[in-house]
Length: 192
Image 1: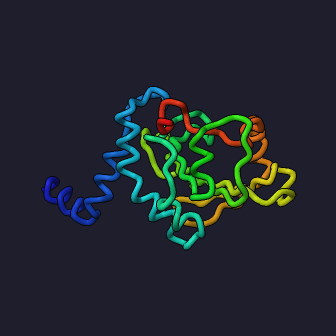
Image 2: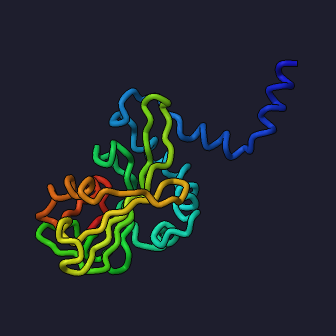
């Protein structure tokens, strides 16, 4: 009887929900101990769900960023953005210059970078979609307090986040020698 009830309960949930939960579980106590295969597995499992979620409310970036240049070979766990796995996409204006990963640069006006994130919950020992972080380069003087960058974010359900510009810029200014850009980890950068 118990077996039948379990099967009946499972039948009420879509198989994709069960599979999604299975493919995001991990046992490492520290997210920095995750293997490359586990990280890539999380991304493969969640990437379609993330793209669908970010675009769900019609956000101008969240709806199109997947058509842009992907700037790395796999998500990286850099310890920034709340210890999330990150993978960056660059629009056509930004792509060529951004993928040089250079110091002493100035990104062209209209450059947009969209950084997908996967939140790693140590408590639940599972990965789940995190926010889409967005940086847009404005015209000179467009936002002098943030070196002409506009910071934005889209929640995994497509809703726009309320972003305090100084919250983002206070970290990004540490990279002022490369126009406030925190590049992907070297081990996941595209070959040049």
